[in-house]
Image (cartoon, each protein chain N blue to C red):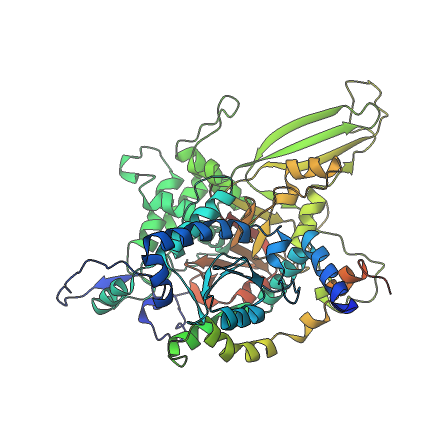
Length: 524
Length: 94
């Protein structure tokens, strides 16, 4: 216990990348000048400047990107000369030819056609510059085409896309001093007696953009809150401490702890609790104290917790006798997945894990959404009234939440003993939930060859999630320890009670996850 | 076109249209991420760009500098993965 330890970042030449928080110093203001109209490079400037030629080029670029961004168009992905299809190709901007990088270079030398459009991303490559150029006018068109490919929905621009101009960067650099790691949410929690189950759940919420933005934008105002033992007020205090103070030492969550005890008697005391149970408890409390309505039959609750975490699970029970299907839709805040039981018959351990011998998250999700037989006495069909009929049940995800929480059921509680399944489950940095949706499963059943909403853009399908947090349980079932990996500003960190350290993607992906938090890539 | 080139083109086309290419690419990307290679490569590129060694050169210059060493750093296990072979076996006889 004690102060937070934060390892130094690897030395970066550009001071700006070291920390998001900057403090204005006392240097005199630089004079600001109107930004001139800029072009991607000298070579593109000339054609774009001319009114007719510029217009023609812009229109051509628009239609070329539409083709380029559609990865199902094999023609655009094939090099005309060598027929090679595996690498990226360039669409020439001045004639209708398509070449792989090597042949594109040769084409430029031969015809002096200077610009090629990358067939995977739509970006413009300038052959004289030997580099990708980002011309503002053309970039605007490219982004518009990306949006158009997604069915016209407005694409929320990611924070990385908004880059300051070189003048801005220079100005910022000369007028600020760094205050690294302060008020950035990077603080640890003091362990107050087996409270690591709490701190890991809290870190997951602190680094969750939706929850964090809600609290930092005064979503819950303690001064105006009249509720007794309000968990939201306690959460608000945590956010204030982590994002609005300059402290880096561990925070003792006294208020949260005592409020938790008052709200839930079974939590009182200093024993280790299950992190997943605490998560459910906490989310419920935050829902109740943030204006959540308990009567879910009349209206869907609109509180931040429901909006962020709740999805819908559809269960279809089919009577094998009369094919009657009973459907029910239930709201869920997380998915609890069973793990594959160890096959006791296998004596040798699998040699290479890369060959799929390791269980994957996708496998667990597939199992979760697969059709299973119900036992003989589990189902009474209303339709054909014979209760000896066999029935099958299938769970599918009807509606996906913005934040997807997955619990891997590692703990088994039997009548005599409890045990922990410690096997490594492989999980991805990017998760595509499309195959587990109700729509996809129905299509698969109907025998349709359409594999669901085709993401015409690599990495931009509507059901793509990015990993946000991982909760890991180490040790035995009753004497273990929890740690958390969370991503903040693109960098992964390891939260171990009050110790916060840098983590690599490899560290995160090799952990034996218990809880996984994924966040949807685009909220359109 | 020689018979070899025709065969190659046909296999490539099938890989693309069946979606197998996309699946294989996703698999290898996952493996590369898990081994830490992806992050290392990104850091190497970032360092090279910041160091000023490239003398203002862009994409091509960067690729020249780092491609060889980054390729060498791909872990041996990834080369052992049989996924590509399995897909191709499904398409080609003999």
